[in-house]
Image 1: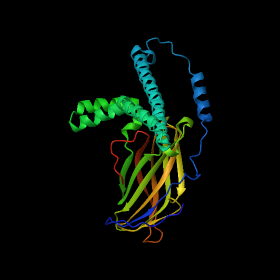
Image 2: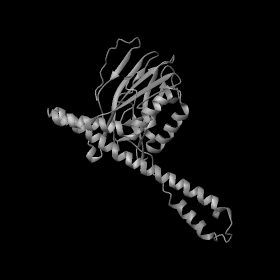
Image 3: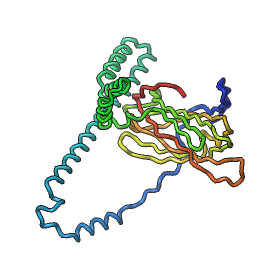
Image 4: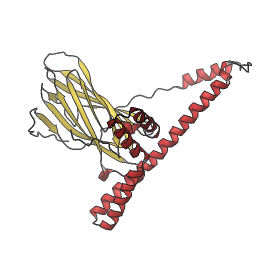
Length: 297
């Protein structure tokens, strides 16, 4: 990717790298074998005689009830998450079909799909709960807000995370916003494409250089991938005090929802031999549903 300089009317000068890049092949966390640990657990279990005390604490009715209740809650949460995943895929397909119909000037079909999308958005439990939560907070009905939040935690934990984040580490501020790209997604094949834009602002008194990046990407099934790379969009930018650097990139995902977080490894360049430090990228959501704050960076 080639970076270009873009002038900005804002008082803070910002160098901008634009364009989309697929993530480069990078190193991942090494997988550690746990076979030895499993063998030790099995051996310990087989060498321990079963308890003959019918009233022991491990077999007490209270313990059993608590275990069954926890298992039931987990099962309920898993079912709700699976149902939401299927509905999200349907929503993504409807949006893509609407875009295709509009492009082909099939306005009758586009109108039908638009109405289907509106109906979906009105009936979707997650969207309805988010609207109720937002209204409850605005009206200071905090008991209701807590109830809606807890329901969302069961249905779709990722939905409570915004599609943007903002964090500052030792004077270096990192702002991120993500957006779903319908034109590059293939819902029927389980391929969802998200773009994100990052603004890094150096509010410290010393010039810094961005050396490396580290991302933690988690999909809706809880699968996590660690990704490392040198610089960003082919650069290791130097960011002087009171200036910034912006760039855009993208993340493909196998589920309609997920999250990203990570850090940038940086160093001060005004002193030879300065040690590096990490600047946090706060968690943000990757969601085809977006969120209520569609405010550009």
